[in-house]
Image 1 (cartoon, rainbow, N blue to C red):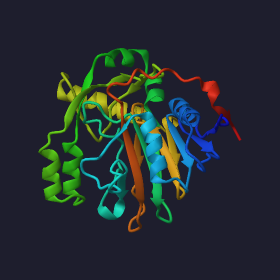
Image 2: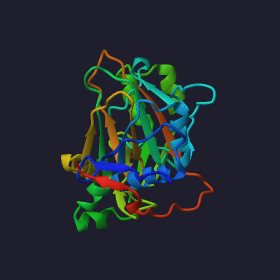
Image 3: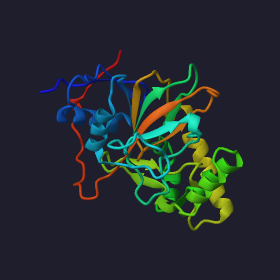
Image 4: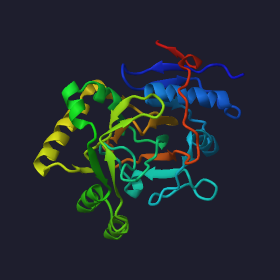
Length: 293
């Protein structure tokens, strides 16, 4: 039997780190279950694993669901198509608040990013707990949002990227012609915890369905300002070999672009829910040893 993981909270509402994760052998089913329990509890989980191999990253991803083979980004090649390469030298960036791929009908539920090349300074990533932000709304605002849906559209950030010279016109056309957009509830219920979370971002959400444009803009502006308060946020300063796993169902993130002309290269795996899988049961939090030091 694997020893219980030691997990240390890094923030009052979101963020924790796993201390001394042993990667000498194959990750046991018990260890993977403890990682999942810690992630569900803390929403964003930092692993200090400079020795982690692509096989081990895929093993963790496969525990959660079906790893994505990304449509646009390059990957590690044959056998590792599910490990996406996010490299600033290729013009890749994510310096905007967003849920990963929320323009899809069923977006990834988990994302994990392994730091392979880091700039000497900068390049931090921030995450926001959208569950904590929802909890802090007034009862009247919660009632107002009930049943509302918003449009998530990939074309808006692609247009901005084209204007800024970040993407070529050819890639812009390739993306926008796919018309990737979807209508999602503004408040989603987490399938494991049952907690409600805001499901919007200034990057992909264009408007609230069925509302007058002025009202839609006003409500979205208020909500964006509300959840971006520091009290709901966790910021990570990367060290080489760190891997961060986050719950894409309940957090938004922003990779700060403040390190040019230096390089930042990440290996990412995004995980979709298995279509035939039975609902995940709530984990026993006692399986994870949480310490505060």
